[in-house]
Length: 485
Image 1 (tube, helix red, strand yellow):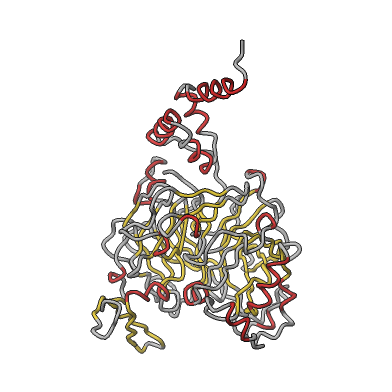
Image 2 (image 1 turned 120 degrees about the vertical axis):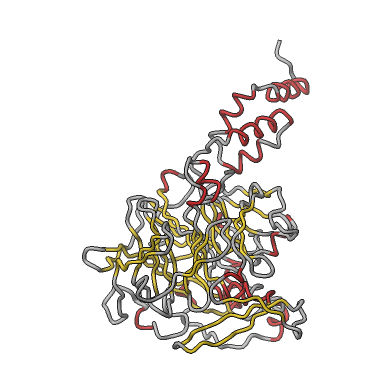
């Protein structure tokens, strides 16, 4: 006879506990990683199966990108993971700060294959897998071509500083930056070819992991592999074909040809081959002038502050290289805060007629005393252009069809939504990635949500207001694809 009542519940629990390990491991191979992590905490036998899964380095199914963030509930050492395709959240159970520091002591400037590029409190970079706690060291900041470590007796933060050489108009000038401040101004973004352990697990060479860094001054390029002693500068000039005063905006790595593609603020694109003893670059797409006619309603404002778009390069599943332009605008935080409390989405055009210079009342200023300034940086449009390399032109498109974008400090992604139930087609999942806004106005609300390409509206996750969202302002949340490798 089947047990009933309390005995029935106990029997079910005992039944689940005694499932064979090989069966559990097979099931674990089909789970999304947040669910897999939860399963490993069910009981002792399930935890043993989870450890076997990890030990065998078995592959998981394709994982949807998740938001890595900090929140009050998890404290300063741990991090949170939010999956927009399911709405699930998960506390990462390891202290992922490394070096004795907590998660909130890091600055995140890149991610790929489950790994993030993080700067510590004195500006040095490392690779980190937040889910496993694994680290891979990168060369110190002081090994970059234009940086030297220094000591400043007048600095109250311990004296360590960096002397950074800037060659504006071929006239070298020296800027001394305290070590505790250097990460706020030094790094624009980092792009990875792959995660260091992902390369080795796939039968490839762990040295295939390359970190391409866009950095001060004026978005120059350097690269390194885990374990290298120094950063290698990709020098402008005849040797590489790159221009001085680089002003590079973004980079994308193509696994089809093993090349990095970098885009400048004039929309020119260079392909970089970093596999040899020295970098090789070639121009693959010519620069444009802003007088060139393109179907953009914002081009007439390009000479205004923040009017030029933030540019992204995105590899599509079909092998195309997509140019994505993200137009942003400073708006009064008073209006954005009040609207966020009432609605689950907002139309950025509703702010364009507001007077950004209007003064807040003293009462409003008191309520916002934790904020660095009374303005927020919001997205007002996202535009898409396919790259016609043969015709040397950009072809505008107004739809992603059944694909979704993920934009921010992460390596930009374009994913087919049929592979990930819950992701919305023709949407761009965005986070803040403006160096000036993220690093200098750390207490200001970060823009996180789903940009509807068709309606040009930013939608909140699950209809929740910003007051209900758990993520804090620092470190700035970043998209990452979970991986246990």
